[in-house]
Length: 231
Image 1 (cartoon, rainbow, N blue to C red):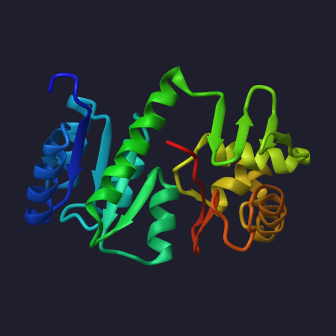
Image 2: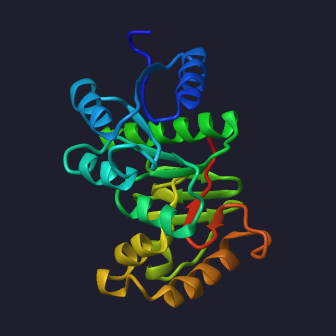
C-alpha cells in the first residue's frame, strides 16, 4: 500500500465516511478521512493526497470555501460529493476549483471511475500528458493540431480547434460554460454562452456520427461540457 494513491475524504456523515473508507481500501487506495473543513485542510497540507473527495455541507465551513483555500496552494484533483443538486451549487464548486461533481446518492462504480480520471489528470499535470487523444473513431494530435475521423482529416476553424483541444486535453472532466468561454475566447466573454452553443453545434456536426446524440462532446445540463475519450 506504500505506493497506493492516497485519497482524502472530507465529509461529516459517519456512514459515508465508513462506506468510502471501506470501498476505497478494497480498491487498493490509501484513505484519510476528516469530518470538518479545517481538519481536511490540515490533513491535505501535511499528507499531500492524490485526490480529495469533498462534501459541500460541512459543519464548520462551506465546501466551496474549502475548494478556494485548497486552490491557493495545491492543484490536487477535487471531486465534490454532495446532496446539493442545483446547477448553481455545481457551477460554484467547479468554478472555484473542483474538478468534478457527483450528487448523493451516488454509484460506487461511477465514483471509482471519476477517481481514476482524476488520477490520470494529476499525472498529466506532472508532465506525462499524452499528446495524442483517441475517442472512438476520432484521433486528436495536440502537437500537430490535427484531427482525424476514421483516418480522414477533419477541417476545423481556428476557434473550433481551440475549443476541441481544450475539451480533449481535459477529457473526462466537467468544464463549465464560463471556464470554456474564458479560455477559448476571453474572460470578458464568460457570460456569452450563445458563442459556445453555436460553435459546439458546428463541432458536433464535424465529429459525431449523430450530432443530436453525441458520444464524445457530452452536455452537462446547465453547467457545461465533458469530452469523453478512450481509457
